[in-house]
Image 1 (cartoon, rainbow, N blue to C red):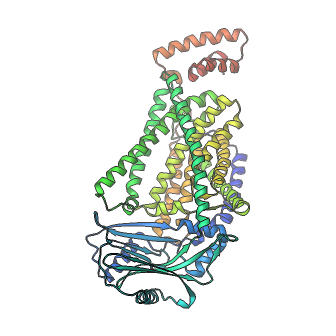
Image 2: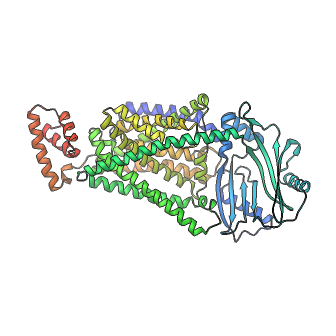
Image 3: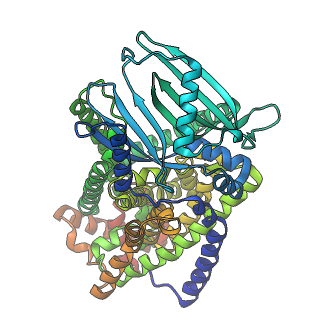
Length: 607
């Protein structure tokens, strides 16, 4: 990264402080409803003890422990009550927005147990005992079943049914038993969706089979149908927008292939190809480890109608196919982007990896880039919080906790956050900044339009995220992408990759830092946020020269001959009065190698 003036450091430092304050004002309050006092091991122990109290021996069962959030209820409460109202509702009614789900199952058998545990109170808040349709239970009357359910809920949860209205009863007869399901609605907890559009109801329920309470839930929001239809409508729009993004990615791949075929003999090709292959392989290895790290999520969705090995094998093949596609999406746009950057922005050497490949990654230029990336991260974080706050206030925007549930279900949650951060940070900046901005500049002939174009395609790619209305996330990310594009062109690719990594990681682990969590989760989250600083320190103290090795040293015999021919041609054009910039455009238009053009012009025009 080029040297930054003191004025720029001070200006970005002040901006970073301002936007960090904006995040604390608008983003931090949402974390107040996150309580992860109970960890995975404790949840499993609680579930096993509960089943032991029912005389169930779990030693022959496989187990899956995953962290869940009620995404629909989360959206509904945010939309109708706002963040503060949601927090008050959760506190008033002791409502659990998050839960641990522990599953006990055996292959080829329908009978299994599922226990939900509150991460705040460690209380069992839900239970299901799934059995075969032909399983026998003693036959009892409906009134006796309801009395059994009410006694159970009073004994286990201290329920005062004076606070509830009876809501619904269902009866289902099987060959050898009759199941009764009862639910009660909490008084005063009804939340309307709109005029004549229904309302959400806070329910308590239990299912009785014979003399067994085979299932229960302490609190669940029954959401109105119109809300569900709106979510489904939003999902369709998200699919449409993502289809546009997919077509754009396909176009990018096609352009990349064409560019690489034209430049297959380029001077840059071997070094760039090897670098992006290495980067892709490292990231693929990390993603494979991350997939196994999230193995509990796979166990949680395993259908016991098939063998686990078959289920695992099919899933693994799908993962390998997606990683193969991912490899292509790094290597092709990456190498092609290196060529395009040299053609579109020949004076911005730090906006690609070529400079570091020819100089060194362990230089103080890289250390500056990493540190500047931290300032940019705080700016992006606060800017996103402001945009989202404006969306909430004026456009009715709301979101879910998808990243928290994804990370917390992993064996090592912060490792999953690290892999997602480095994967998205590297891949997306290569595709949409290195390739996207450079390609658009070459053909649109306008830097601002190039930055906006790449940011828009990047933004549309986020339209399937759990933010509603779905188009808002596209706008939000597009605005951030424009700022990313400015930093990319002004300060290089290292700051945007670092800022992107930190941004994604922080959004995932911030509940571990600012909510109630264990020291293990807090320290792990802090460690992966500080990782780039360790790289910066290593680069700073290594202090390798930030000077590219002479490009002429890597030329093949044929390339040296082509350079001599090109120097002769450029010399004659110079005598004819042609300027270096005009001559550069003419040569690149005729597909001359950008590096050879640069060397020839530098030699003749002494630039």
